[in-house]
Length: 242
Ligand code: SAH
Image (cartoon, rainbow, N blue to C red; front, side, top):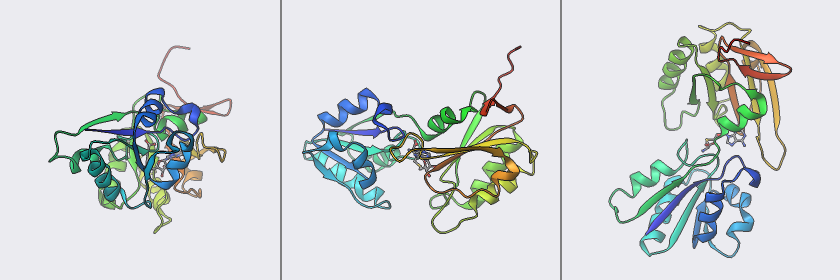
């Protein structure tokens, strides 16, 4: 009995890991959010597909477990990496009573790596990843983490910078970072990195970022004291003597 937890990468099939491709093609059942099924349409054709809306994560994992218990080989697919704000941990939790089910996490290229590559090389030194989604993490905890990271002069990569309910999360996050970092700090954001729709990216200052309009398909990178703009690319220098 086996479930693959598969990260598809950013979306473009060129960035789908060969191991992920093989695992999906070997699976009898593929479980995932409808939008992600489309990314691997050629691979899932003819297979049993289980997809529900965005908020049915637990229900999706539960059905993956049920199918695995029937003896079927199952793939649960997520964007980016399955273990980074993905469904891998939920699968482990929900399958805790079923040690007979083997769970294999197949890593994928996470949004931070995709966005960083498009912007230049902003994650070359110590960095932190924070999700601004307060659906599962209280906003006060998110604020505490933002404060600690900016105090520590870490580059900060923000996932879920925009929620459906509130549109001021990024503005509030920037205000916290501005307590410790200057408004001229170099930043950038990327929408739809390596997706068929085409990506959009922008390099800006922290002041500008606090006024930027972003959506839930965007990853934001807030630079630190070592982040520069070199020939229109966002680069965090490591300190080599050049
Ligand atoms: N497991 C995923 C993250 C899911 S959380 C991963 O490892 O990448 C969803 C957030 O990821 C989005 O709100 C956005 O911030 C980011 N994201 C996912 N795909 C993206 C893409 N193609 N371009 C930019 N940001 C993306």
